[in-house]
Length: 254
Image (cartoon, rainbow, N blue to C red):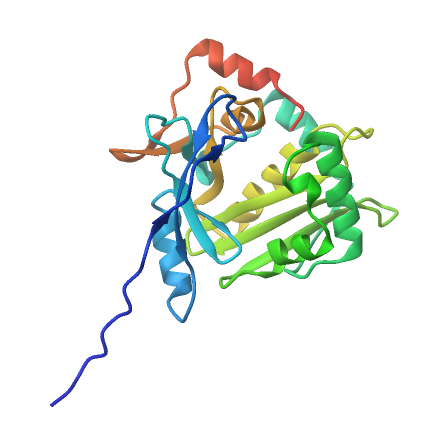
């Protein structure tokens, strides 16, 4: 008599409430589960399409009582076109050489990461990360993960993007860059580069994580139209009020 092994159940847990890093005077909670074993890739695929994000070997999604501010978004690659400021920033950074490398931490990357945190997120938990914590963020992944290093003509490391590959696109896990320098829109350029790579590979989406309309740190994502958002009806086009659309277009510091 044939016996089929029972599939190990997938357990989900809710974290304790902590101060929200994006909206003042609010608390955040997350629904988390572990990505491990031979089924990690497939599990991540399904969870990513359900609005989850990955950090290390954990997949998570917001689970904040009474708050729906975090909205999963993804760029529809085939319909995307660069407009105005994004087109200008794309052209200004065309001299950068993008190099796909394995997800392995280096001192050079960490030094850029630390400068970025002090410039953009001083006082945050990430700004306190040492090299060991940075290495874990980059290397602790059970799925297809890689880094993209962006270097100028002199070979100087200018930006880095930690990226997950899925069957339907790329997921921008975390990016950092030389902030406060002469270059404009490096954060935007990284996203634009991922979109172009997805287009070349005929991948339909670039996942950008969570869009929060009232957070300056997250509102910039709305400029990469057309975007789809995940809600009760599944993935649907994001429609912005005119005032909010203009606000996103004017925020060019990412």
